[in-house]
Image (cartoon, rainbow, N blue to C red; front, side, top):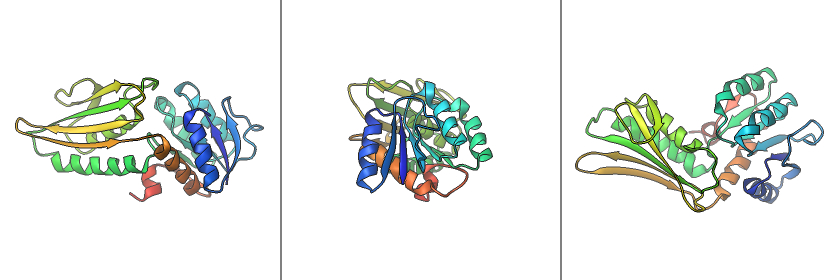
Length: 232
């Protein structure tokens, strides 16, 4: 495949290395806004930029009928518009709050545990996420996805940054050193605690998942997620 990487920071460079190691050609390494010219007829774009520019980056790619794999978080208020544009242009779009294969398996585990616990009133739930001090959004997109998985399968109606209260599911967002990403879900009662946890050791897992998603999405049409890629 010919891949355009949009957002050439730490993640972009790892995506570049993994793409080439899997036999793909990186035809664009963009720190600037993509255009018809600098996208260089890519087969797919992998977008890991900043919340402020993600919408325009994705929009340009879709208008040029280039499929997009997007891992940028913090812009999701505009996601419905992007999905509409993808369908209008008959061009596939896949957003992932986290492309790690392990995290996506964790999402499925989290939803199943929420179903099991939904009628057991002795337990309350608390989420915690820890990331490096450079991360711009809080809570993380991954934590929001975890919270949404619980809300869909429990009594909770919304999430908030803070401690869990009544029907509001709490998320503690901690920024610490150079932590790539740690996410924990705690079910606590007066007598015990159940915890599920995912710890990323580095960014390579995120990058590999994004490249696998890019390989999967070519020649498809529609709106997708990593659940589709992994068959979950």
